[in-house]
Amino acid sequence: MNFIITILVNGLAVFLTAYFLKGVTVKNYLYALLVAVVLAVVNAIIKPVLIILTIPITILTLGLFILVINALLIMLVDYLLSGFKVKNFGWALLFSIVLSIVNAVLQWIF
Image (tube, rainbow, N blue to C red; front, side, top):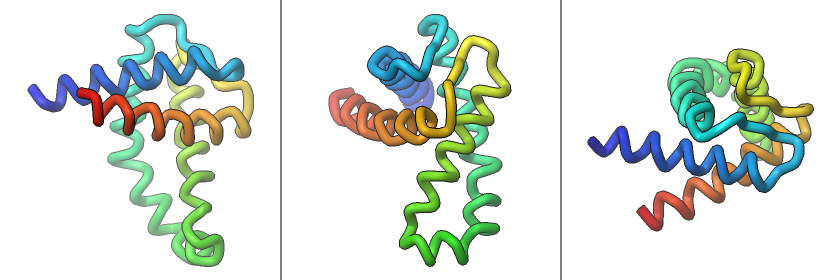
């Protein structure tokens, strides 16, 4: 039950973030839920591998390279889903930052 609430809140965070940013579009809330699920799967499977492979550059940038990894994963989700569009890498980077903030606020509320 907790997992379902987390996915619903993440979907709401994706939907609200896409609403606030002009460079990101989501067709409707159903696609926002799908983006939340696919992003959770990508973060669970691909992100740890990328972090391990990029440890040296992450150390050199004092951890800021993880933001680049997050943006690349959002671009991957954009490629996989037709109802979710991100204009370019800059918007993906901004989307990942704003999504984290909105998600943290929504998790705190719910």
